[in-house]
Amino acid sequence: MSDHATAVSETSASEAIIRRAAPYRLPAGVVAAVVVGLVLTYTLGGRDPGLVTQSVVTGLLLGGVYALVSIGLTLIFGVLGVVNFGHGAMLSMSMFIVYWMTTSLGLPVYLATVVAVPLMMGFGMLVQRGLLNKLTLEGNHEGPLLVTLGLSLLIINVLLMIFGGRPLSVPSSVEGSLRVFGAIASYERMIAFGGALLVALLLTLALKKTSLGMSIRAVSANSQGAQLVGVNVGRIYALTFGIGSACVAVAGGLLAPFLSLTPTVGEEFTILAFVIVVLGGLGSVVGAMVGGVVIGLVQTVGALYLPGTGSLILVFAVFVLVLLFRPQGIFGANR
Image (cartoon, rainbow, N blue to C red):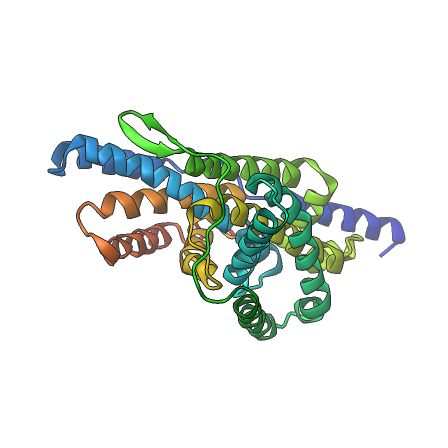
């Protein structure tokens, strides 16, 4: 084959890889299921409408929290194929960074969050370059899993040594609540929900409109094909892990004001975050947002009928049903 033909072939392969980004059209079945479920709950559920409205508002805000935690994970999982068991510990780490800056340096919590973002991004890039790049480039699937598990244990124990195991709290910069359709929504949770929307929007635009985003999408679709057309896969892996870690910093800072901080606080979100990532579609930022909202609604509205941990049964039932009829997830691309 001539050099010209090879170049044309490689260019075509690159364009084909980039075009394989998942579409962002919400499946009608998901919308219909949510609407029908809410209508049935209001009309036939046998619960006070005001209580249902409060559960819906709480579920939407809780879903935003879940989405915020899951956005960084879905980026790492979808691009690198790494099951990051250190995600929860990194969330705890970001919360304690914010806690230290607010209590020791006197920074407002949201300014401390802005400062924590580049710190966590640098930490994530260092982890990927120093510990994971060689394994991921070789296609080793077991190694990164064990490394991130070990990293999780290391982070948790270091936090335990420095801050102890006693629950701590971050002083809030915003207090009060707002009434929405008769339901009460705290400003802190609304800010967290708005932060999740903003992060999802910025990441989506970056992935679709920038050259770095094209490279990330290309590596996600076919790392070998991307390497053939000149993409530095190792660099993209490091940047992707760094961006995912920066998203964790945003999540940690926005969650810290209304959570009790312990070294294992981030682990509480890990299982649900993986459920949301798979439910929304691997690598889909919009999918993580929609999946988080769906799971939040199912959990809070379901708690009206199955209190306590019983609502988690409904969460996993919905998860199984979605994967049964749409195995690639809500926004996952057919491969």
